[in-house]
Length: 125
Length: 125
Image 1 (cartoon, rainbow over the protein chains, first blue to last red):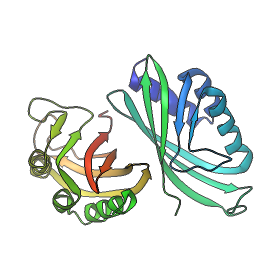
Image 2: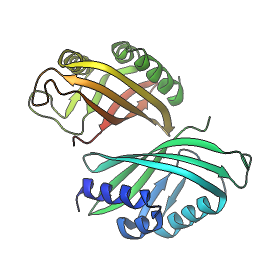
Image 3: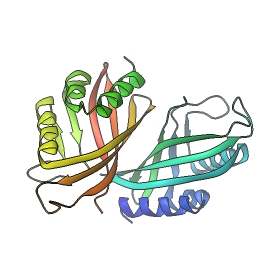
């Protein structure tokens, strides 16, 4: 699959809520994930599919998801961008119980037919 | 100005249609611009403020702009992402006279208080 095809598969799986399947089938074993921000519990930079799967589990364990959308993929060279929108209520932390809508850009780098890096761009008001 | 402040200024100027002022005030003299696609008339990669200004002129000369929006900025490290939506009618080329809506992600890299690289992610259906 080329960059556009991997992006299309990524968007299709995420639209169906199958983000774990996307990780398992489209990502390289040593893929990196780089958030805009991080803390001790959830570091800004993570590496390896196990860490990425745990991050996904953490998100779904700690958020009630009311809805969302995925737009894209929009490629450029060996990368593609996706725009996510979320409508969630955090179950823990300083925002617990406060329903919020947010958007972010996901930027994915492809090498050897797999996603090797995901980077997320967002701003916590 | 830090990355977020430069991004906020960039979004504010573009919302007012002042993209030329954004180039003149926020970009480094040798800034690079990398499109998703290009051709002989409009190469995929350009370098230098003069080339970037000419690209902007080309866009406004060759498109009737009905409307648009800018969302963001969403930072990550030394970069920030912006989502543009356009409602335009090309005046020339294969799409001349055909009104179209499109979206793209703009990714900007900041160094030394200036934007040194802009990269655009989109997909021409």
